[in-house]
Image 1: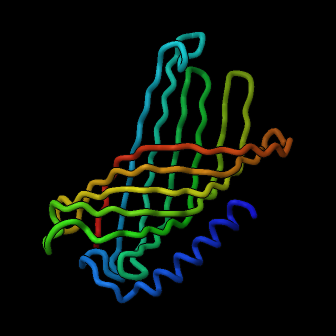
Image 2: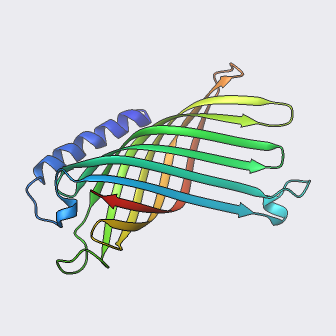
Amino acid sequence: MNNFSKFMFVAILLCATASAAADSEGPSFLKKGTRIIDGHFSFSSAGNTYFENPEGDRTQEWILSSGGGYFIANQWSLSLHMEGRWFIQGDFWNSQYSIGPIFHRYFDFFGGDDPAGHVVPYLSIGYLWGQARVDGTNFESKYNSGMVTMSAGISWMMTEAIATDLEFNYQLGQFEEKIPVDQITRDANRFSLLLGIKVFL
């Protein structure tokens, strides 16, 4: 079973569970029909002997992502996720762009009836299709990618509709080389820690 098949299997289970949970109680901003917009950012810069190349160039990576969707059931949302990743070290750089669906399962926030100031934990799973490009001084490669993405996060409600977000993300999948045309397939996995914001409408 490939990664996409595994994701579809889990997604079907999530849809069935979400349907069964449609009548469960929860905060008003996590109710069925609520729309959601979010965005996340991460940056890292690493140096010293291990992370620098012989010319002394540091390793730097940026991650930007955004998404929008709605709650298909109480405390369950489905979003369209878009993501960009850039890795730079001297003359070597890698860029990747991907898009795909993500299911989120939110849990009851901790606190009373007023959402502001309380914490909302969540879990998510999705699948991202994308393209990656790797460039160096004397070479260029392009890849098509397919990645299962899983996250655990905490949203802190600043107001009744706006939350800051801290998310731990894990991605697992494959990159299939298209240029040069060698059809090389490379397995990949990575962890990321992201900061972001969510808006419930």
